[in-house]
Amino acid sequence: MQALIAYFSRAGENYFSGALRTVPVGNTELAARMLRELTGAALFKIEPLLPYSDDYNECIAQAQDDQRRGARPELREYPDSLEPYDTVYLGCLLYTSDAADD
Image 1 (cartoon, rainbow, N blue to C red):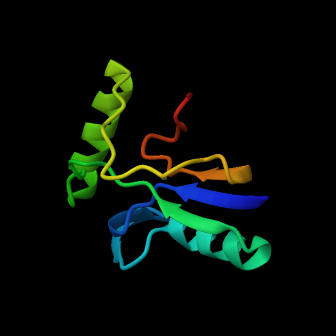
Image 2: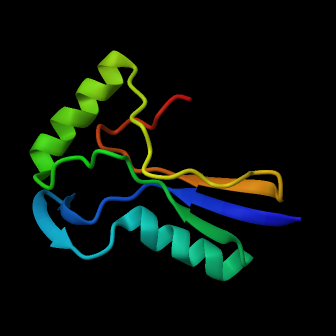
């Protein structure tokens, strides 16, 4: 059996140590890549069909609104199947200091 790392990450404008910075690769993607090096797992990037705003503060507002409404945005694509995987690692970012609860 195989392992899969499914992750949702934000590149571009991000918040680091009290300031906004633009980065080419998000932290969750960096962590997913490191985990792949350790485990040999396949990578799957979770991307919403309608992307969040590039503006960090607007993105936070969108994410908070999604959480309040219990929204689950449609994804750009889905894995063909999870059947081949006996282990699935899930990496997500914490827009609002709170991970998704389902």
